[in-house]
Structure formats: structure tokens, C-alpha cells
Amino acid sequence: MPVWLWALVLVAWAIPPGAEAAGRPVALASLDGTSLAGQLYEAASRPAPAVVLVHMLSRSKADWDSLAQDLERRGITALAIDLRGHGASGGSATALGAMVQDVRAAVQWLAARPTVRPDAVGVAGASLGANLALVAAVEQPLVRVVAAVSPSLDYRGVRASADVMRKLGDRGIWLACSTEDPYALRTLKELTESSTVPRDQQLSTVPAHGTHLLAADPVLARALVDWLHRTLLS
Image (cartoon, rainbow, N blue to C red; front, side, top):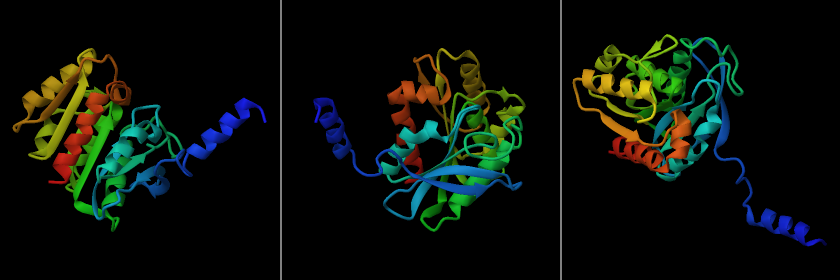
């Protein structure tokens, strides 16, 4: 047998079964019945705190795979969803406002699982997903904490405003962006200044946006996981 073929065989033996597919696929419905696809990463210790992960426009739940696995290892169950019109979900990718329903449905689906603590559920989003997470949490008392990476004051009509921050009250909020991302940086400044309670804020010098920023800056990604662990397991 050629040396290169032996190498492939050894690599195959070294990879444990199922290593290529983290989490497991699940199906759920948005509040208006639109079919949504998700990837569920369940913590070993149950019932566990849990987080819904919301991707950027034109991306998919796969962007959260690495961070979701970190959360799973830290004892937090994660559900990454494909927003409508994205990935394996149905519906239109142009209906940004309707995607708020997708996030709310994911929160309800996750909180209803017997393996999840309904008193310790959070939402984390990036770019458009950051705005959706903040807006969706307003009408979702189930949401205890929100993490928003690279949010915008107005993302094509999905607005993360001072009023949204006011309505979220004293719930935990983590805001992060790159110092090289002017609109997101301005958004963080306005949201923190308009809030009546202190908000956690993280700035990165890496020039990237949303989940690309988390992938490019492992220190920031670790800070997000640490914050979710601290706030949801307390």
C-alpha cells in the first residue's frame, strides 16, 4: 500500500466517530409557522442553562459551531438556528422584521425542553442577529441575558435603540465590537450611554465584524463564553 494511503488510513483511525458533526440537527417552527432548522449542543449536566445563537445576514447557524461547542463544554446548552430564508430554514431572507419571530420561537422551544433550566436562558447574536436578539428579548421575559456582537442602531429597519435598552431593564446585556467598525462602535456608545444600568462592554482591536470578529479574536470569543457562564450559572 502506498505511503500516502497509509497516512489517510491512520488519520481516519485517529478521528473519533461523529467528530465531523458537532451537536445534532433539530427542527422547529417560527411563531408564524415558518419551518426553522437548528443545531442543538446539549450540556452533559442537566437541567442546564441555555443560549439561542443568532447568525448574521446571508450566513448560517454553522458560524456558531466552535463557540457552541465551548458553551457545551462549560455546561451551557446551545441552540444555533438558521433564520428564515437561510441555511435549511424555509421562508424569505428579505423579511428581516419577521425574523424576530424566529428568535422568540427558538427561545420558547429551548426553554420548554426538560433538559433546560427555564430560569437561565439567554440569546446571543451577531450583526443583524445582535439586533434581533435585543429586540426579541424585549417581549420575552424568559430571556435572562442578551449578548450582542457588532450591533447597529438600525439594521434595515431592525432597530437597537435606547428604548429597547430601557425596556430590557436590569437584565444582563453584553455588548462587543471592533474599534475598527465605526457604526458598531457608535452603536455601543449610544446604547451604553442611554442605559439606566451598567452594561458589560468589550472592544476588540481586530478589524472584523459579527461572527467573523469572534472567529478572528479568540480572546473576545472566550470573554463571551465566560460572561454567559458567569451570568447564567449564578
